[in-house]
Image 1: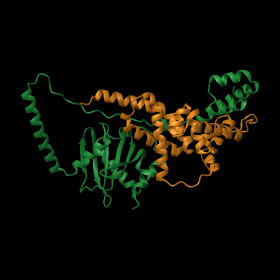
Image 2: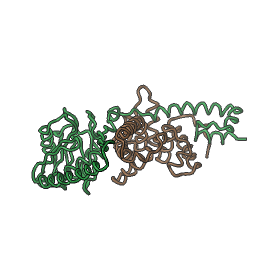
Image 3: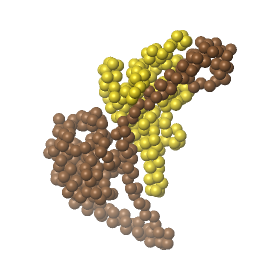
Length: 175
Length: 244
């Protein structure tokens, strides 16, 4: 027999969990898609799927990677539904300028624009590491790569990003 | 012993790496110390850059507004066993009789039951909000069913393409002064005339749409009377544009 009080409590807890993770999930989706509307759409779909599958989340501590996996799948599905044409990064930057702008900090805006220019394979692990706090092993598991491959991508991502932002890269190592 | 190239390669991939070998190299290399400081400043900026401001309007969407869970009425502990059996048998007979009479009286009833049943699958849609669903999402849902919706429908706060009786149908939530009202555009379900229903806390109406199936419009709770729900149904029906 179902326990309605328990079920309501469990729903409320799941709702609170969704709300607490939502900002970072939106940010992750934004950096993945480089499109605010698509990111919001992907996160909304993710929440619907997560709600339906909430019983499969056995440990609340594992919620972040659980949601992130759903987001990545949902984002991939958006490609199946829609055939995207070649992306012009400058157009993307212009379109998302309000999101990329940072009050009084021109260099943050430059850094965000540079992030848009990073290839997906470098941008995604970097966002997982810096924004989502993933370890190399966790990124490797999520992206189905070896630890060494993840480290190479992270190294290349930072190297390119620093060069694009006009950082002093004279001491940066060669591969 | 690690050299400068190896150290910088490792630290550039993982600036927070605190491995003992890295620390040992850092303690003995002035240039790598300078490099690490510069890299950590960059990391601080990168962290702030990635934390773009999240649209506060998006955060206003409540994920879940839990439905009232159905109350289960267990047998009273002092009932003798044969009374419980009799009560159960009577309930089954009565239930069957009521179901048959309702089905005979109103063939649209089972459609209403399915619509109400579907509500339990998306309880988070019943949020009272002034935040519209992203336009791109609404367009997508409507386009999938070859529909357009004029602004006269009112503020749409939720849109999803839902599987209903084997078809994908638009499930929308329209905000009204009295609260959210759900609209399901049932292009594959026809009814001969408007059918009112009141089931499991949901009151609504299924109205026929000539040549395009029907429209189920329902509300939850005591905020709105059925006439107002019918008013919303008429308004949404007038705002819908079937493109095929």
